[in-house]
Image (cartoon, rainbow over all chains, first blue to last red; front, top):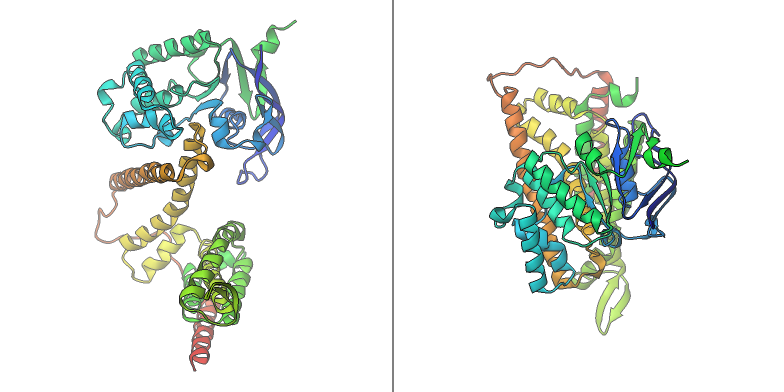
Length: 230
Length: 245
């Protein structure tokens, strides 16, 4: 199994942490493999989102290294990282930009110079997959929280990437939409795509996770993959 | 108790008013340097957060070059440093104007760190006790709090755009204009939504329920406040009078 993201002895403190110098992530070493669904769980304030942002290269470690496909994330631009890893923010509103739902899904493909016909086909697929077709001409900012979440997911899944990091993807989704997300996750996992999913949804985690990691106070306190090894 | 805690926010506002007025009226690079030094010393004494201020001023440094070139082109003065044909592209006068602009901006940014040593609640109370209507004083404090949030939001949007696999430095110029609209749309919409939410929250907490508002916090000026206010006004007025005479 190929190693996709490696965190080697990574520590991180926020510049304006309280109390000053409080360590958010403390000397974490973690290898996230492609073709593996990893669930990241733990109490609030345990460092899950910080760890996910470090893994995605959004935050740079105070010490240690993060390697994405063997390349130091500190030496990669966010655009480069975005071509390898899809990241869903905890607050989906943060990643919606365009004036209409359809334009928002198409936005990255358009800017990267993809063929118009191909973009239209992919957007149509995503609209159908995430049940957003009836909203395609609406403003993303007028959608409900659940709809915004689905749109943000459609926006990152349209880029065929090898790894996705999803921060609380089931928040605000009803049972039916959660089942749709489950089907999509299964389909992607079946195609060898890796995922790191932060979730408090025990049912969702139990259904999909091949590996579960629990974080408390910036440290990994449980890793099922190590637990299962002899 | 530190000077930042003991001084009345109104004293700080007067000091800042004097410093920023001097920065606007004075057009001499040495006097402007002196005004910046004075702002810096006051901010250090009051334990102002100068580090972010430095970062902001650093971002403006490129403007020195732009202003210097524009001034040199349209109002050439002093010795010519660089020429294109017969046109003076850069003159010593232009460079001085550029440096003066940065000094002015630095005075304003450093002055802001002086005001920020009081909490926004104290500043609002100071304005209210100056008989400024509470609604206006509150609006000022909300405006002050919103500005850093806007900067952070722009940063977040840029980050999210790049995380969708868009390499900003490789995008052709025509498409870059489109990116600006993608940056502005969520910022404008976000600001309107936040303002609406704030208005609702204020209504639910009975903002303006009564015509007069009482306050648990009451500010009282002490002797050092009066001394500093008198000194600031006197010195500023003297500088302006001496400079213009």
